[in-house]
Length: 249
Image (cartoon, rainbow, N blue to C red; front, side, top):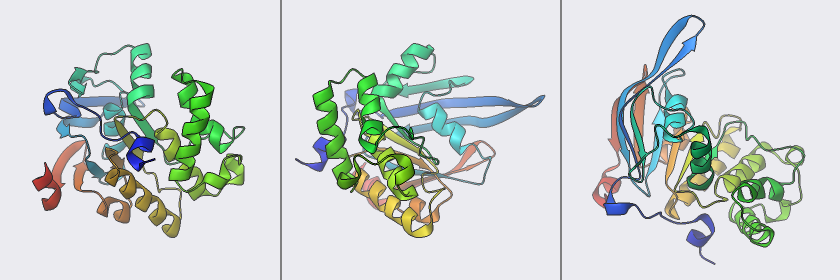
């Protein structure tokens, strides 16, 4: 079985347009009695197959931008479009269904359920999406093999190292073959060697067709991206595209 059939491959986007588009997006939040503008007038296009790192100092808006891309938070101003569909004003039920089927998430602290095995953690989003038990079992085994943990399927998170837990979390993000995977500081809890291994896995995912957007302070992780978006004070201050990747676009 090919790698692309395991992870889902590139999604089809009508008309060859961008997979994700942000149009003059702004997002505020309250810090005590003060309003903080976390994202300021950001416009971006993300195409299927891109490997993007979002970098910048703490508090610059990286995580908020990911939440907007992933339909976790709605924008206060502007629009977010996924595959040409405006997802900015979805209700909670619609946004949850969208995230479940089209967007994979990887978090700094893994967010695995400690009472479930590695395989059960990966199967959980499939069960929520209505995938049958036999297909869930087959796909979870394939994904565990893909991330190099075929022999850890019955281990629970407390029995796994940090790097192994993050690999399970990545496999879980791929469970429903999403159109895009968003990762927020995915190496932040890992030592340098293990972080480098996870960075290599992300690079492999992208080579095999996964669209990736990663918010990170990790220079090695960012160096593997084909496009680097620099943020400061809620705004995009620089958007660098590798020359080879730009020619492919």
